[in-house]
Image 1 (tube, helix red, strand yellow):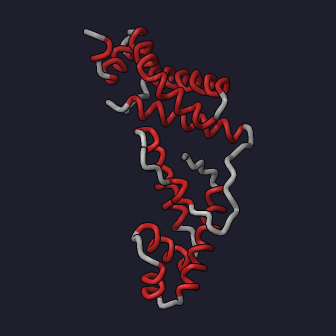
Image 2 (cartoon, rainbow, N blue to C red):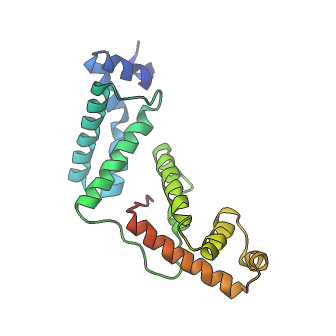
Amino acid sequence: MESKTILDSVLVNNYINGNEKSLEILIIRHKQRIFSFILSKVSDREVAEDIFQDTFIKVINTLKRGAYNEEGKFLPWVMRISHNLIIDHFRRNKRLPKFNNTDDFDIFDVLSDEMLSVENQIIKEQILEDVKKLVEELPEDQKEVLIMRMYKDMSFKEIAENTDVSINTALGRMRYALINLRKLIEKHHIILVN
């Protein structure tokens, strides 16, 4: 059977069962995507090489331990490992990406990406989940406006009418909601991936 036609899940099982060549095929098959992804985040070829190596050391250790249970989802699983290692790299170097301290900062601009690849989609979903949890920590009036605007796509005029306040008050609450959300994101070390 041609190596190109063997499913990732079959190669993973073959490797777990002692076929070392299967892992080599998996690495060759996915190296370009994984390495490009890492490089796009760290912008340093040497660091990217290190993180790529560490990713596969982690992959090998997990497979050898028999702790792999991502049936049929090998690439997204490896992408998550590399993403976590990228975050570790930034934390170790105290180079967490800084946010623009402007009034018109909008976290959802950072999250929007028309051409989402599989790995970015996974990471975006995780970030959105994390952000949704943080939204719950906002004061009630700010949370209400943010949910109406971001999740229900309501205009500020509609928000003002629904919450019985002026448009200026609604805009002010939204502004404070975004400022507070940014602080919570920094406090919880959530990395926003473009």
